[in-house]
Amino acid sequence: MKKVFILFIVLSAIVMFIVFSIGQINDDLSEGVGSSKGDISVKLFYYNEKGDIENTCNESHILPVIRKIDKTNTPIKDTINTLLKERLTEEEEKEGFRSEFPNDDFKLLSINLSEGKLILLFSEVPGFTSGGSCRVSILANQIRMTALQFPEVKEVVIKPETLFQP
Image 1 (tube, one colour):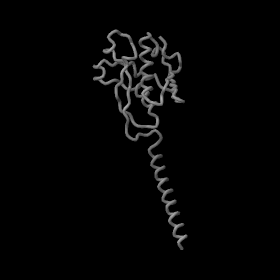
Image 2 (image 1 turned 120 degrees about the horizontal axis):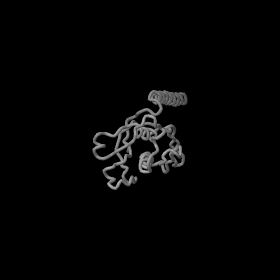
Image 3 (image 1 turned 30 degrees about the vertical axis):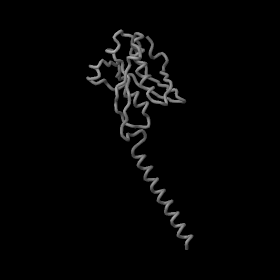
Image 4 (image 1 turned 90 degrees about the horizontal axis):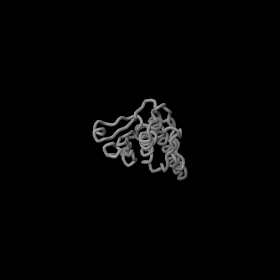
């Protein structure tokens, strides 16, 4: 009788564990992959021309602004896409921040992170990513510096390699 009672308890515990697990899986599925579970603060890097009095276009004049984005399973991709799509606020523009983003045709096509090396593949938009060395350096560094805020990113490779050429 004692063995039957112990077996009943063990089986009940297993059934309760299975029921709880199925409920948890259903909750996760209903939220969807990459879905929002709150938000996170990220840095988007923009050129600040007020700070660059000598017009050096040096990366020391590419500074962060803070944005909140949905917390997902793809924070690096979401942050880069936010940099490419979102406009500066009026206040940020008054502070001297400038950006050539957004451009509706310039898109992040793929992202691959392996062993600290982040490879970003972008669409090519004739004339958008070319220009003087100052301009293309600023555009490329905005993307690089935005990606490098993530501790798992040690190196950023932008493709195609010819994308940001003066």
